[in-house]
Image (cartoon, rainbow, N blue to C red; front, top):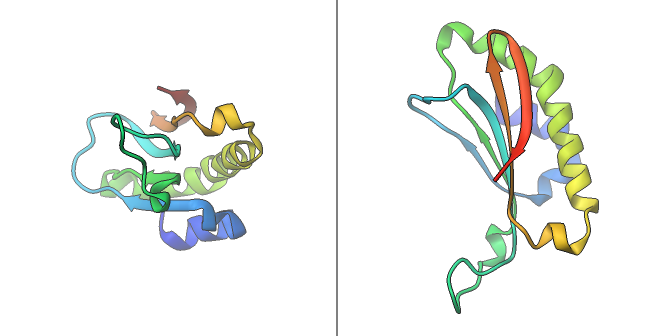
Length: 119
C-alpha cells in the first residue's frame, strides 16, 4: 500500500488523519493495518494533548516482499473500505466516544483478513 491508495480511499477525510505511518522492520504479529483515534485528553496530570496530534493515526505494517502484492490487493479491496467506514462512524460518533482513545486492527493470516477494535 502507498499514500495514493489511502488518499484515493479517504478523499476529504484525509484532513482528519493527523499521522500516516508506513512502519518498517519485522512485525511479530500478523497485523497489516491499524488505525487509532487520538482523543483530545491529557496523557498525564495537568498536561494536554497538542491539537495537531488529535485525530486519526493510520499505521501500515510491513509484510514480506513475497506477499506484498497479494496483501496490497486484499487491503485495497477489503480493508480500506472497512477503514473508511470505521472513520465515517467515528466522525459521526457522540462526544463520549470522541473523548476516548480507540484502536482498530486488521490482521491477515493464511489469506484471511480479520479486523476488530482493541484497547
